[in-house]
Image (cartoon, rainbow, N blue to C red; front, side):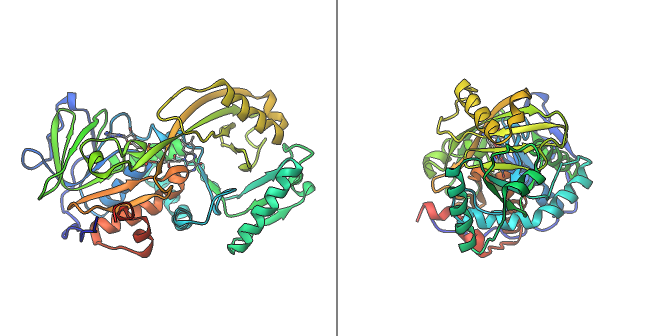
Length: 408
Ligand SMILES: Cc1cc2nc3c(=O)[nH]c(=O)nc-3n(C[C@H](O)[C@H](O)[C@H](O)COP(=O)(O)OP(=O)(O)OC[C@H]3O[C@@H](n4cnc5c(N)ncnc54)[C@H](O)[C@@H]3O)c2cc1C
């Protein structure tokens, strides 16, 4: 597939639609549209962090936006995420294109989070105090040393902390810890609050959000924009963005045309209650597990990485394994009450790298495949996609993320 030049004329519109959430059964779906099926501006499928943040950025530029959401906004992967914002590739992962996107996005995060907090009134628990990669056995110590060498080779130096230094920083960590790397640039955020804040600012900025409105078909046209079937009616817009997370490759007939775009990778997570909010002070990882403290005393233990389709079971064995690995690092976990358990589906593209860009069909864009780092990627995805859609701007990074790589 080739790229198309983006459509012209996406600049500021004088008049913005009024903020509202509509359900088809409420009969409000047609207000604000011109023609039978044609709606103004951009139509986005999927109200996760990716769709909502892009919608917000487009609205800020004066572009009217409607989002069609199958369930409730920000209740799928973007709700399930533990909210770690990694500054370096994880154990066993490469500094690939996804990492470059993450690095660009992390640089945007402080300003993005502060703007979003102010605009929404939602405190995001955004923290910039780094994370620890721990070794709690001799074998893990060797792995950690290899990891440190790999990062140094990539010009990503991280500080080595000896056992006593780890204990000083994190008294809750097991006494036999062998050492740790301090990833001082890592950040974290409360992903659920991020989703709530994005929904709030999207609506405040004049966006139209159609919840409980599943897109059941995307019909491609030889000429002109595709037609979307959802909520018992047809929708068309000059620009259509598919941001449906793990479900992005399932909607007929577009799915038939594009082949498998993404697949779900299941993650099970536990939330425990800490005796005090600073019992664990900063996020910690071992090669097997992430432990993430939140400001309301929740301690997230996660997450499994499973090829299990859309299976939503919380499985006893997975829970036991999460707890076992957490106790190896933080023995106090054994006495903590279980507050919540959930799972979610990370959208993984065929090559594991996010997909952001336009297709050959006029006005059809993809913004998905953010896999394990979609919360991290949110600010950069929104900026890149907004500038592509409205200005036709295509920096090098967007060339690397373009869907064309699957169709050449
Ligand atoms: C357990 C777990 C832990 C994670 N931890 C982290 C982390 O620490 N840091 C990090 O950066 N990332 C993390 N992630 C990854 C991150 O959550 C995802 O990459 C990101 O949320 C993807 O956002 P999205 O908007 O593409 O997808 P989603 O949030 O899944 O949103 C897609 C939306 O599209 C809607 N939709 C689907 N089909 C249709 C349709 N046909 N019509 C209308 N709407 C439709 C869905 O209902 C959904 O609301 C984690 C994910 C999981 C599951």
